[in-house]
Image (spheres, rainbow, N blue to C red):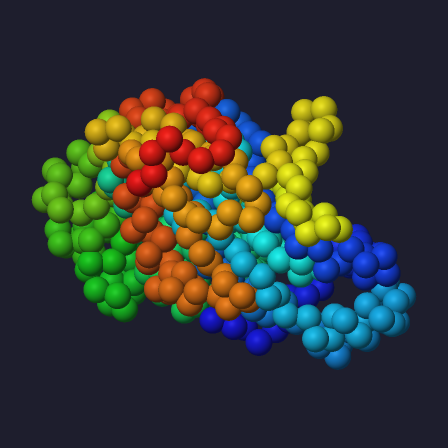
Length: 446
């Protein structure tokens, strides 16, 4: 699903200056293994959700240095002429394995593993992290809201609180993690996500009175539409809505007030007016905690804006991209790791599996293997977590486009059901399951 637009300059300058220096000293061709992981879960959350993978695969395909990109690098003297010539024919030719989109992750989980020459892999760092950090943050927040909603529909409606492309990506991530629709039409077109929306307060204010606005909306959209009843007085708005649309009115939306109290009063009023089938949708700065507080209220659906598109207080997943193994000058694989205080990493390729006992996840098991070991075996009783996403530079189209989104959404629903009961809590806590590292081969192969 190529956009036809180069993504090559969606990167930090030092990626290319490292490449420039590596081409000079001969280390650019060394085989390397890079790993994307989070050292911790933001905000004391109990799990994270992998999102952005399908988008990223298309962006990697478009990571090409055309005439305009090369001219900029040359004119700005960012790299030398030899590096410009090398970039002219650059195509990622390595291998990317990783967790499926929609999968849960925990501290240390090798969400993506990128293998290729140093030159091949290092210049993808910024692009990979910008996509995975943003989309995974949105998906994690959305999953928590979906848990709080407990089966009631959620609509994403936060486009006006995000950048124009971030809004499209956020709608996609929220849908994967359990939202049922978006207000963003580009997300609907690009990813085949169901879209929703009827009218804002401006519609009511445009007309001479509320009844005229409601009558015009019903004439245009039918009595099954949803009418926004809180522009003036809510009780009067409900009376007017039912008078105009009749008891078959599809729904009312409430965007202000003390929502538990207002929702209860509106439900009672609708029932008294004979509109027992009319649904109540609430909006108004909702997050997972506000949704949870409405669990006992007669609310049928939620619309969430700012909170979901900004990660509900945690706009980045905090993932990093680290070199964990490289070939030596003699061709041997060497595990490498950063030892900085509070930022240490674990060297070596990781083989990831989730221990499942009676349908419930109990452990994130990361087996550290020789970097040359590309087998995909995991110990008996665990679910393998890594799949091949890019092989010899060719992306797996099954993970891209609308089909990839639907697959990720289904996968997320399945794996979220594996969480232990404590994993569904919204308060700050330890990760739902521990991450355990194991050296070498498993005691029993699956």
